Amino acid sequence: QVQLEESGGGLVQAGGSLRLSCTASAVTFRIAAMGWFRQAPGKEREFVTSITWSFGTTMYVESVKGRFTISRDNAKNTVYLQMNSLKPEDTAVYYCGLRLYGTGEYGYWGQGTQVTVSS
Image (cartoon, rainbow, N blue to C red; front, side):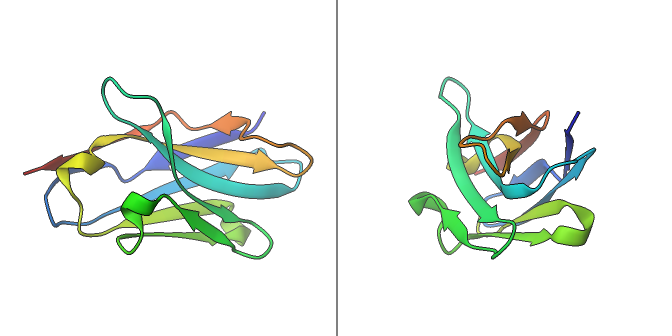
């Protein structure tokens, strides 16, 4: 069973930076993409960014463009999220997701890591 382990969350002041990591284990099929989603209190989970495993094509939600950068290490089955110029509205639980080839959705999720940005 695929497992995703996230790390790197924490408390930071507005304008600061954090780097999240997510490593996938027990992956026996080809990874199509990995991504980051977030859920703030009282809100639904929203897409933040994703990266395709073969070509490294990235997508970002408009609100994080120019501030967040997703990257991957294929050999380590690890995806990173560098978050700069953090804002209080970035406060949320961040979840890592994995999508396998042949599927149309993210079928595997990490446990989530809390990111809190103070003003």
